[in-house]
Amino acid sequence: MVNESKISSGVAFAVIETGGKQYAVKEGDAIKIEKLSDDFKSGDVVTFERVLLRDDGERTTLGSPHIAGAKVQAEITDIGRGRKIEVVKYKAKSRYFKLRGHRQPYMKVKIAKV
Figure (cartoon, rainbow, N blue to C red):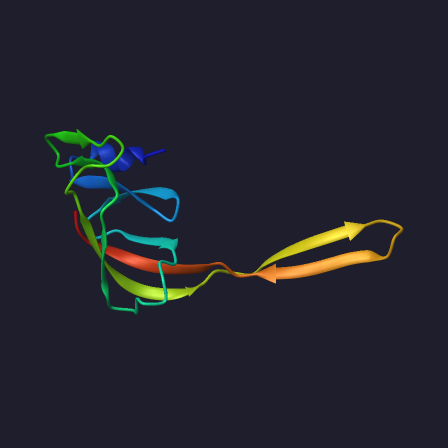
C-alpha cells in the first residue's frame, strides 16, 4: 500500500521494488531495504531499475509490471544488521527446547534522483 501523504503532496515520487518488497520513494527519502550484496560499500551509488510507478506531479506512469527505462538512483548511507529476533521451539513434557537467534542484514539508502 502506498503512503497517501506522498501522493497528495504534488512532489515527484516513484514506487520501486527491491528485496521482494515495494517502497514509495521521493528525492531525499532515507529507507531501509534488504541487503543487496557484499559488493556494495557505504557511500556507493545504487540504481533501482524495477520501477512500478512514477509520478512527476502532473502525469502518472504505471508499469506493466515495470516501466521500461525508468531508474531511481540512491546512495548507500549505512550497512548493518537489525535487532535480534529469538525463535523458540518447545514441546511440553518431552525435554525439547531449542532457542535460535537471527539478525536480518539491511542497507539504509538515501534517494538521490527519481
